[in-house]
Length: 397
Ligand SMILES: Nc1nc2c(ncn2[C@@H]2O[C@H](COP(=O)(O)OP(=O)(O)OP(=O)(O)O)[C@@H](O)[C@H]2O)c(=O)[nH]1
Ligand SMILES: [Mg+2]
Image (cartoon, rainbow, N blue to C red; front, top):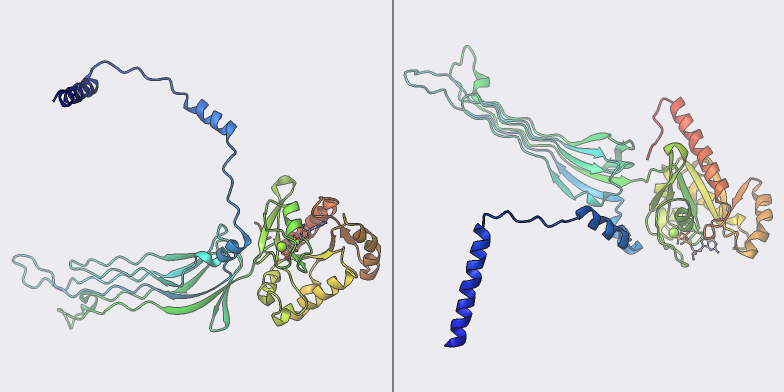
């Protein structure tokens, strides 16, 4: 019919056009494309991609501070048993090569890793290859590295076997098995044609418990709702969740405070502690563990509550019960929420009762943050000097 013929004609026509375009020798004119200008334009109208903020609940899922791991070293390859064969050479002699050694499984501290969430429950090292004929030795298994965060404690059967607190530190979790010997190895004067070869040894197998203790210069301790997370937000780029209910923070957050000359001080916001935490009340002593490694402490007090000095006493008691001497670390008492009228009134009394200097500030309005930052720097410098005097490298984030 006419319409069908018409459409077929059109199709043929367009086909011809495409062919002529494909094979035309005429150089095509390059369209002026201002790629960079386009990008700049887009950048002007779009906000830079921001890291998606995870809710505290999701963060809890990502933050893992304990792991049980089964590690197995790679098995060694078997030795080969064979004899050299060549035309007109009747007794070529043994030429079976040795098997390669199995690869070790090694824990290595990586500063980029912040929790044990990426650590799997099982690791199998790489096996060594079997030996071959013509004296070919098997290739050894490669080393398998497990990346763990700074401050990982390795336990086996309740005993601490390694304390990985420095970046780059390594611990051999499981040794690879030795490779077997080929029959060439057993060649001796009294045995010119040995057929013996040995199998490779199995790799070592261990069950390890990994435990993370957050390593930061300063640890913030306080009761729930004291404003620890608000303060960390005010002095660093960290973004822990802030809300008016207790136990908002469910895992430690580390924020970095930047000073002149690229100096950095890491401050950890530890979940709220309540009286009886050392008996596993509230969030328990799982989080007191994270305070252990901090070089100095910031006791954060909610100044708007009645008798704020009892908070400091209770906090010190809990720390002391968890580990003797923990509350004696270099510390500062920080009185938060000075913007509230009732708080300002109880400040002199708090100072009098404690008999020590208190830094009063407001994490929400940012009032009086400088004295805290200066004190933090002084504490950090004193700790770094002490470390250097003892011949150790000061902790760097
Ligand atoms: N007025 C006033 N309110 C504050 C100040 N700092 C914190 N807050 C409020 O106190 C409440 C608790 O603050 P958070 O920072 O979540 O307290 P937290 O110590 O981290 O609490 P947990 O994570 O539950 O242990 C929030 O409603 C904050 O807005 C302050 O300086 N002034
Ligand atoms: Mg918090």
